[in-house]
Structures are given as structure tokens and as C-alpha cells.
Image (cartoon, rainbow, N blue to C red; front, side, top):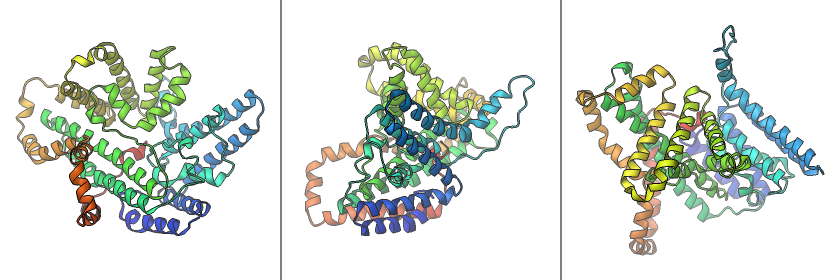
Length: 471
């Protein structure tokens, strides 16, 4: 089950919201949420829900013995057991086939590549569970003595499938003491519908452009203009798809009394790649920083080595493929060049120039992970850097650009902090309207309109899943 489905919107969510609201005690709300979350996951992964429960139990049981251990060596042993259990499960399901393919490159080695389906969201819930056991080992949190409550933390459906990665420390208190209020439900619905609109009205439409441009049966004859349009649409799709999901997860959390941290902060306004990655998928970046980069020595000891490891693993986390590893290493190289030559003179570079160069570098990276077949990637790069202007004279490409140019421009405008800027500039008129009689109808009208338009889009068009489900 996914957020952008009619079953979720009109059956699952209303039922879950109503039953949790009627159960005023937090313990009862937790029980209902746990059942709903397990059902939510089992809807698409009926077998792998057992894997998630088993992994969570082993980590929780390890934390129980870790908490009772008196020596540092014993604590470290139970930490290792938990980490190895979680990562071995992730490694088998996500990377077994990839590693076998690498081994088969060796002469005289011919191992059958296993066909293993990837459990949805395994990267997210694995990392999330690891934050608990690691923080407990560090003495930063107290042990969660209730396994059902810990399982709720791991399986909570708003952020289960595609994040954000929620640290146990951030919701530790909310698991046992929170309030579900009408204001929280209203604000959560608004945030959820913004995310839903991002997904079904922008990301899905951008996906159609990408398919037309980059998935054609005649890809070898693609023109330069078509290639550029396709990869720009891909940048629009991935941002609105993932940030839309994060908005929906945060909104759902508000409805049920949880407060998750932001996962995106308008990354496309960045004037450097360093800034962009501080604004993009914040929960993953902070996870690698706090649980790997800093323990390895951070920027004080072996900075280059540590940065290399982080970006190698970031690429590998996103996908089991050479192109994902290459994408991670590409960003490692770009960021080192930027650190050496760009950041020292950043103040002298006009902001708009920095933003354009940053977007070009980011979009180029998207091409690396988009094309899983090397032949198609090199064909794309050949068209992208074709000499002359012949590629822009293609009639079909000109038609495509005319059809979608307004959408491309508006999408990039919506990816900027336009609404916060307008709220700040129009603070007085907005406050006046909110206090007037008409203000009581504006918000419900906007909410109803977003829901209606999004529903119509879901009914009228073919559905494509969230990109980050495969991670």
C-alpha cells in the first residue's frame, strides 16, 4: 500500500485516524498504530513483514542484554551482534546478486546469480533500528523495555517505506507521551496534501516526460535537445517524488501526534554541491555523518579517506549496481574539486552562476544512476556533448519542448522557497484574511481542491510508484 493510492486515501487512513482518535490512552493508540502499520506493510510485502519483525526483535533483545552488561567488552559484543544481524539481512537481500556478478568477472568463476526480491523499505527501517542500538551503546538514550513499543518505532507506517530516517532519540518521548489534537490533524492534513500534490501532479507528469524522452524504442537516434529535456524532467521527478513523500510522512506524523524532522530544505536553491547535499535527504546525510564519518575521525583525521568511504557507501546504499557506486564516487570527486577551487572564492561568484553550475553537476550525476546499461549511458552522453547545434534542430524535440516548457519552468519555481517568501511579504494581508469570515472558508477550500485534483489525477492516469521504494 502506498500513500498515493485511493485505498490508502479513502479507506486505510480514515479508518486508522478515526480509531486512534477514539482511543484516548497512548498505550491503546500505540496498539492500534502497530496493527495498522504491520497491515500497511503486509499489504505489499506479506512475507517480508516477518523479516522486519524478526530483525527488530533481535536488535531489541540485543539492547536488553547490552543494557544489562557491566563491562565495555560485553556491551560492544551485543552491539556487534545487533549491527551484524541488521546489516547481514540488508546485505543478503539487497547486495547478494550484485556481489555474485562482481565475482563472476574473475576468470573461471561462474556462479549463478540469485534472484532475490528486495523487501520494500529495508534500507530505511534497518538504518532506523540501528540508530537505537548505537545510541544506547553510547549512553545517549534509555533502553526501551517494551518490545511492542520498539516495534512500533521501527514499523510506524508514515515513515516506514521511504523515510525520513527517524532516530529513536527524536521520538523516544513521543512513543509513550504525546497528544493527538485537532490542530495537529488539520496541519497534518494540509502538509500531507501538499506532498500528495507534489507526487501526483508534478512528479508523475515529469515521469511521463522522462519516459517519452529517455525510454524510447529508438533511443539510439535521440537528439541533444530531447536528451536534455529528459534529464531535466528526471531532476524534477526525483525531487518532487521524494520530497513529496517526506511531506506526506511528516504530515501523517502530525496527525497522530508525532513530530518528524524535515528531510528537504529547498536543495535546488543551492549555489554549491556542498550546500545541496546539506539540504537533500537530510536524514540520510546526518545518519552517515553521526554514525560513520565522525567516528572514523571526521575532518580532523584522514578527512579524504573518510569522505571517500561515506560517498562510496552512499552510492551503494542507493542501489546495488556499478552505476550507483560510480554516482557516489562522482560526487566524491566533484566535492573535492569544489572544496579545493570553488569554496575559497565562493563569495566572489554570483549566486545565479553558482546555482546554474550546481544544477548542471547534479543533473549530470542523475544520468549516471538513471542509465543502468553502460551502452545507453554512453549514447546519452554522446548526444549531450554532440558538437554543433544540429541536435537542437530536431523537429520532434522542438515540439516536446514547446509542449512541456511551461511545466518545466513552473516546476523549478515551485522547487524554490516561493511560498515562504510570499507568506513573509504578505504577512499582514494573510493575517487579515485569516481573522475575517472568509478566512474560515479559504483553508478548507484549498484542502478540498488539492484532494479533488489529486484524486482526479490518480483516477485518470496510470500510477507509477515512488522512486525511493527501490532503495
